[in-house]
Image 1 (tube, rainbow, N blue to C red):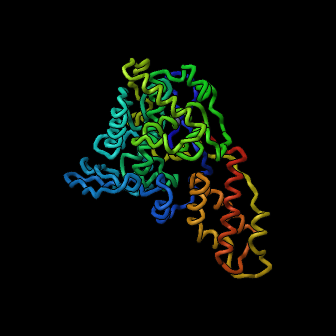
Image 2: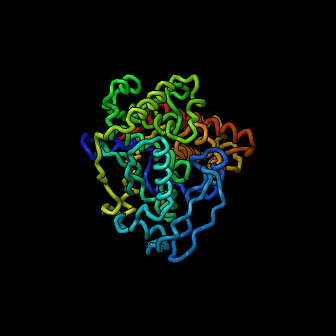
Image 3: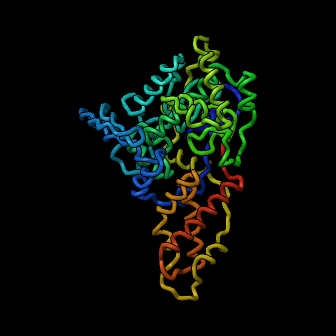
Length: 416
Ligand SMILES: [Zn+2]
C-alpha cells in the first residue's frame, strides 16, 4: 500500500505511512507456498505475485496470454543480463549491500507500469509525469513530485525474499502496483501544484499540515472516504485521503461516479475532478526531479534493511489469549492426545488468509497473533477432542476477535 511518511519538515523528508508488524526476524513464521494462490481468488491485492522469468542474457520474452489486470504475471526482466546474486541462497543474498544489487526500473515490468500511469495521466490531459526511482520502500517525498518504488519489485528473486521476510509483497501484483502508483501520483500532483494550500482542499480534506498520527482508529463503515488501497487507509490523514481520492478518480473508466453515488465522499471526488480540470495548462509550482534514497546509494545490506523493517514494525504486543484459549480447547487433564497447538499450526494459513480478507490486516500481523496463540497453547499444553469444522469455525471467530481488538485498541499504525 502506498505509504507516505511525514517526518521532519522540508523537501526530501520521506512520507510514508506504515502498517505495523511485529517481532523480529527469528520470530517470523515461514510462509506457505499455498497462501498466494488461495488468496488470489479473494483479493486482487493479494493475487499472484509479479513474477518474471529469471533474467538470463539473450533469453526470449515470455508470451502474452492476455490475462486480466489483477492476475497478470509480468514479464520483461529477460531483456537484462542475469544478476550475479540471482542464484545465491537467501542467507548469502542478505549480506549484499543494496547499492551493489545493480537494480534499475528499466527493462523490468515496472517500466511498463510507469508508462501505463503516464498514459492514464495523458488521457486526463495532465502534464506532470512524476519521476520514479527505486528505493527501500514506497514513498512520496515532501516537496518533490516523484515516486519511490521499493527495490524488490525490480527482480523476481527479491520479490521472493520480500515475501519470505515480510509475508506480504506490497505492490506485488500488477493491479496492486498500479493502485499504489496512482496513489503516489496523487501526492505528486498535490506537491507539484501546492493543492493543499487551497482553501477548498482544506475545507473538504482537512489540514495537510496536521501531524500524521502514530495510530488511527478507522471507521469501517464510513462513507466519507473512498476505499482503495485498503478499506480504511484514506482515513489516516488528509494528505492520504487526497491521494486515495485522486487514485480512485484517475483509474480509467470513471467508475467513481457510479461506485460512490450517494456517498459523502463524492464531494471529495468532485473536488479532485474540478482541481484537475483547473490545473490543465497551469505551470507547476514545484518541479524538482530529485531522488531521495535511491537504491544505488544505499549502503546497508539486505539483512540490515530487513532487520530495520522488523524493528520498525515492532510493537509491544502483550495480549493474553489464555482465557479464550482455555474456553475453546481442553485442559491437559482430559488426556486427549491431539494438541491444540498442532491443530492451529495445521490450519494457520487458512485462518490467516480468511482473517486478512475480512479485516484488511496484513498477514504478517495476523500471523503474529496466531503464532502467539500457538505458543500459549503449547505453554498451557491445551488439547482438542476432535478437529471438526465447528472447532475450526470457533477458532477462526476467536482469532478474528483478537485481530480486531488489536486493530481497535488503536494499534493501526500509520507513520513513525
Ligand atoms: Zn500516501
